[in-house]
Image (cartoon, one colour):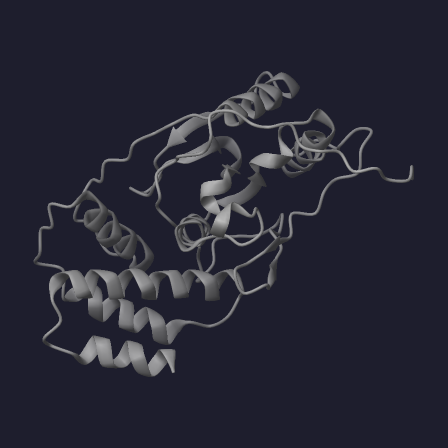
Length: 250
């Protein structure tokens, strides 16, 4: 049904520029979701390319529209026609996690709010390890539930992975407590070549919007699939302490 709808959109010569932009955004989000689930979406890439071509000679003044075209260009491997402006914001939880990570590795190079390939800025970048760490607040999830990522978040992650970056996603509600934060620190230690100490590493399996699980593979190399998004970083500036659940000692 979706394939039929996309085909009809692509072949409709009477669509307005705004209609094409909205259709392009929808196709990109669908591509991102499929790529995160390791499904083949080459047929959608073709429709994305067709829609992109119809916008090549346009110069929208709206910054959001410019970002949409920029992301499509990144996905398709085409030259970026714009240099988008992104507002940056560093949340307290992001800053605290960066400081914690830096204290574990004083010599580790960490960059914040870095825009890669004209994409929305990432929270933390470890350039020596080609790794991105995204600290995700409620705005990255449908209804702020910390379970189902929204289209913008899916698209951002997909584009980053398509560009060859390993992406580690950390819900912000896991960073307001040292005990909950430590497994992620240990996981990153292992990824950059240092064994974890005194704590089991946490699996980075995430539930996608259609309830499929995705595992970030340590050995993952740039592939033909990708992952991306766009809402500006509007994560909350403060974090409420995570409630501890009583568990039996292991």
